[in-house]
Length: 267
Image (cartoon, rainbow, N blue to C red; front, side, top):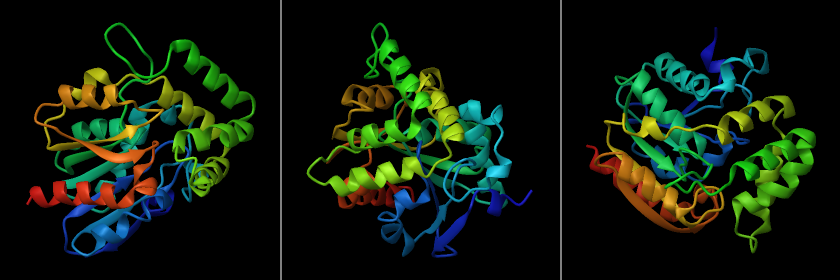
């Protein structure tokens, strides 16, 4: 199988520089990193890709069984790293891709040497002693709405997820990204994302890890960032002066500065 075509791999930046892999979240594609790439490209080999079922990936490669589990997305990451023969890469995962990164790093420790988690959440549903931000009923309602009218759900929810109502163009961009995703594939990815529980996996992380949270995030509240930080030994938590769930778009300067500080410290 042609992995480069399957996952729409694009490599830019310095060919001999340390590798940084940028992994997008649900309903998005590699274009979500366009404001991050220039900050990295001068000194790093920057790898962009789309999960199968997203962006410019090959839709013929999509299998519901594989992508009904976060491990299926993690295998995409491992496949990309193996295709490019990456070693000790920095994996930057946004939203659900932060947890995908945990699984990928465990599956291929020689390929992934450190993790950056942007607005991560290991579990979206509240339980005793844990606040994920949603009740089980909230998630059931969210998924039911998404499955009954995906385009309508996207138009209503994308601006809420993005935050920053004073900048409506950001919400519109996320809406367009959601709407460009095949609805059937998006439904599977959404169910996989919002019903996942990766809390136990956090304890398995042994690589240097940066956790980036936002001051206000409707999808991943600050209690979640604190939880992730506490569960990953030796991790670093940075609270960005940003609101919404996509700081790489809403606050690129602060996001890039924190990312670069972390990456420089790995040398």
